[in-house]
Each structure stands twice: as C-alpha cells, then as structure tokens.
Amino acid sequence: MSQWKQIQQLEIRLLEHVDYLYDDNFPMDIRQGLSSWIEAQDWDTAANDESMAGVLFTSLLSQLDRVRSHEQNFLQRHNMKIIQQQLQVKYTSNPMVMARVISTCLREERRILSSACMQEQVCHLSQRESPSSSFIMSAAGKPGNPI
Image (cartoon, rainbow, N blue to C red):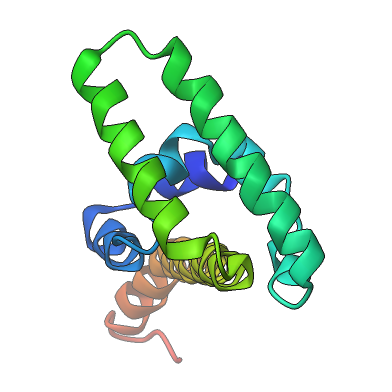
C-alpha cells in the first residue's frame, strides 16, 4: 500500500500532524494528486543535486499539467493551475529547495506512520497481556492461592 494511502487511514489526531506538514511550500492537493509519482522519485538525492532537482521540478510541473488536463471539476482545475503557477514562481530559480521540502514531508510522513505503528503494537501487546494479567489477579485474589 502506498505511503499516502496509509497516511489517509490514520486516526484524526495523527492526521492533524500530517496537516501541519503541508502549506504553500508544498500543498496537500499536489501530494494527493501526484502521490504515486511523488513516492517513486528520489527526493533525498535531488535535495542535494541541482541537476536532478531541476529535472524533478520540470517533471512535477508536467505531471501537474497531465492531472489538470484530465480533471473534470472546473474549480479543481482552476486551483491546480494557481498552485502550479505558485510553485513555478517559488522554485524555478532553486528547485533544490522544492526537493528538500518534499523530502522532508515524506520523511515526516514515514515518522508519523512509524509512530502510529509502534502505538498500535503497544496496544496489541497490552490487549494480549490484559487477559492473562486479569487471570493472575483473579487467581491471586482467591484465598489459598499463592502468587
């Protein structure tokens, strides 16, 4: 399952952390619309490689054009066009900044997913221990049963 699909299945309190990651530097609309493509790119390397960052930036704009051209909803198409223009103004002269922003967002998503997974494991462990703990407590509470 893609990272973005996993993110969307998180509890509300964790989704609030994800919401905090996305702003005008990298709008969530773009993350949603290009999720598979974004996850398939090496943003960590591009964050330190001007040439690769430039190629990915150009590709991202092309991907946005492609998605926008297939969008049926006029308002969504309009919003995507505005976002694309904002990204061009912001990152054309320095695409490595965009690569760093995307790399950071993806890394933070992984951290949030990892945290959620660890919390889930702790919950499962405590649920598994709970019946035996209650058995020990009930057995210990009976007269004549040594602990």
